[in-house]
Image (cartoon, rainbow, N blue to C red):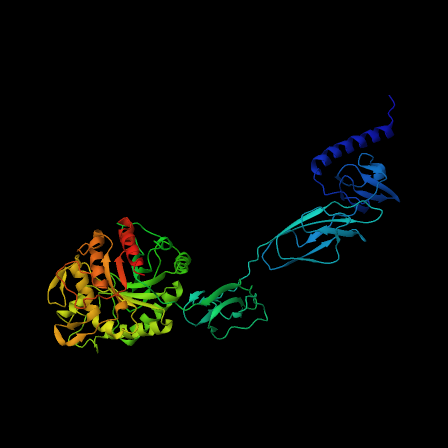
Length: 585
C-alpha cells in the first residue's frame, strides 16, 4: 500500500498540537488578562485574547500557551486565528497594594502601552471615561481603594486594575491642656492656670468663646477671672505631633448670698451605714436650708481631701449646683466620729488651708463645717481661751480666717462640737473640756452659727448651777442659753465666755433615736415647747428658768444628725420643724 508522507506529517503535527492544547489548558488556565503582545516570538507565554503581529498580519490567541519554534500563528490554527484588535495593557501600581505605617503613601500608576491614558478612582467605584485622568503620583494618608484602567484610540480598553492600601500610621498627639481650678461657679475672683503634660508643648487659648488657632495668644501666665462669666478654650501644639483636642472651661463669679430666716441644717451621709437609705445629694428634701456633706477626710499631715460616695465628681458637682439653684447651701463638713486633726506647725497649717480651698473650689461648696473632735484638746498650761497656746488650735483658727477671708461675707462657717468641748467648759477648762472655746472666740467675727450636739452626752451643768439631762426641754433651753448669755469658764465668774450673737446660736438634735446610740433624742412635741420658751419666753413650767425671761427671738434654728436618719424616720424632723419655723417668718 502507498503511503502519503505529507498527509501523515500533518496528522502527526495536529495530534501533537492537540496534546499541547490539553497541556496548555491545564497549565495556563489562569493566565493574565489579554493584551497587545507586539510581534510574535517563540518561547513566549500568550493568553487567550492576546494580539500579535506576524509577517505583517494580525493574529488573536485562542488558547493560552507558551510558544515554540514551528508554532508560528500561520502554522498553528489551533492556537491562533487571523485578525483581531489589540487591548491596552492593564495598569500597574507602585508600590504594591498592602499595609503601610508611614503618615502618607505616594502611589504611582503606569501602563506599558505607549500613549495610553489612565483613568482612576479612589473611592472604590469602577472608573469610566469621565473619571479623573492620571497625571502624577497620588498621595494617600487614610485607607484607600484605587481602581484604574487604560485606554488608547484604535485599541480595546484594558481591564480594570484594583489596589487597596491600608494606612496604620498612628501619630503622637499632644495631651489635652488641664485647667486649675476646674470650670464652675465661684464666689470670689480667681486665676486659672493652664498646663500640658506633653513636654515642650505650647498652649494657645481664647477667652471670647472662639476656637483657638495657631495665631491665638500663647499661655504664659495665669488667666484672671474677676467677675461675670468667662469661657476659656485651649489647645496644645508641638512640632511633629498632632494638635491636642480643644478643651473648654467656663467660670462664673457669683458672690455667695447671706443666709436668712430660721434654719434647718441636716448632715448628709457621704457613705452607707447600712442603717439608713442612701440618698443622692440632689434628692434630699427641699425642706432643708443647709446640707452639710459628711465628711471630708483629713490626713495625718493636715491635708484635706474629699471623694463623693458612689458617684463621679461630675455628677456630684452637678448635684451641688442643682441644690444651690434651689437656694440651698451645701457645706463641706470636716471631722465626724472618726475625724482627727493635727496642725502642729506652719507647714501643716498651709497644707490644711490650701487643700481645703481646693476642695471647696472643685465641688462648689458654700462653706465649711467644723465637726472635729479627735485632736482638739488643750495642752497643759493652756488656760486662757482668749489667747490659746495649743498649736493645733492656734493654727486651725488662723487657717479658717484665711479661708473665710478668701470667700467673703456670704461664706458659711459653722461648728458642731459635742457638749463637753463647749458648755462643758463651765465645769473645767483643760483637755477636751472647753477646748472649742478658744476656737469659737477666735473666729467669733467669721462664725455664721454653731450648733452644739445636744446628744450622746448624758447631762451638763447649766447657768443656774443645776445639771440637766439630755433629751429634755430643760436641757435644750439651758444649754442654748449658755451661749446666748455667756457663762463662767471653769466656774470662775471673773473669766466669762462672752455671749454670741443670737443668730449665731443653733441647737443640734438627733433626727431619730437610732441616730444617737448614747441618747439625746427628744420628741418634737417637747422640742417645740423648748423652742417656744427659748425664742418667745412662753414657759412650759419646767425646772430651768431663762435668765432672759423674754427669750431670744434671734435664735437661728435646728441642726440634726442626719438627713438620712430623718428619711429613715419617715421625715419626722423636717415635717415638724419646717412648718414650725416657717410660721415664725
